[in-house]
Image (cartoon, rainbow over all chains, first blue to last red; front, side, top):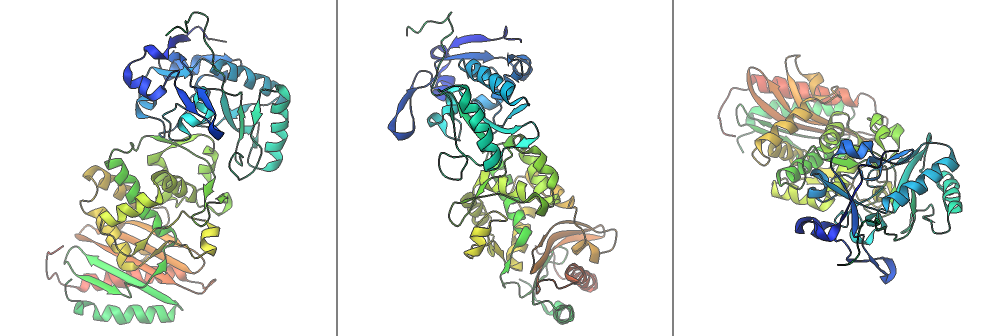
Length: 198
Length: 286
């Protein structure tokens, strides 16, 4: 597992244009009027090659958890370095446990890992902006696009940790019908070498 | 518009051809860029646009790129979940009914916008169409049509939206409207780079049993077909090395299961071609 490339940085020290998009430490409005503080500490990723080389867990590279489409802010889409919240390590760890449990490759969809608060889908309201959520569209040869497969793997994911939330199958708000949404809540991670003093 | 007298014979020939082939209705529009002559037979009659509406989506996709909303090399998430224009209910496309099933292998991953545009036209991919239309937005696409002065093309929804269809929300078009759409593509509405790319995509059309089938082998056609149970259309720009191109829209409507629908469109294409080659140039007006 290669993680030596991980360079933690304090988002408050980033340039203004990055801060405007990543909004480190700002309050983000959640569903039902809840307020959660957006991640402040990030890993700085120098290139796609680096993202592909960094294994956050034995079966998950960083690249899989940061693939977004052009709904992401252009600066964050097209230019390196990229920044991902440090809590992405926790997500990868959970996904590894999940993979072991289902005993099959787990595929994360595009826009299904970390999305910045500037991403057009969900923005700062989405838990994906914390780097603690994953949308799994396929497990082994099974595409998760029906109640049976989503229900089956939802049960497995939920059994691994009480803090994990998995959206139920369905076509209403808060449900999913073409992927399995797993999240660890609004967790943030402060690397031990970083200070939270402003 | 110049006189249509030159086409009097064509008028009768096409009406008779439609009758002979049991077409319930036809709508034909033609603009010859060599002579400036225009022809329209029931050109203002509305038809279900079927897949010819994908040309309108194509125009919007490239217009948005020209406006720097994104770059054509950008990637889009490929997923098979769309929302009905009728009531917002989610629906999926049936891979078995899509002319480009290979795109479904990309579900979960991404595809370049340029590749999706190519698949939407050349392979008539429904999945690519709905992905692109959802991305640019129906309202934006309609605005683009207005800005391009395209009347007679009503883009209201993505394809295979059965809930919308049941409520009568369809994509409709007239032959005159689709002709003006192709004219907008060929004109200066898009940047020259986008225009070239759009025409290149239309030239790579894989389904060639209608307009091209009525033409000599040396003709090339930038075109898009459209077929549903009752409609069979082809619209395109016909390039002939010896002359300026002509633009035509051939729309037909049949009872379901009528045979020989594509052959009818091909025969209309042939009749137009023969008529034009007999026509002496009268003007260079475009």
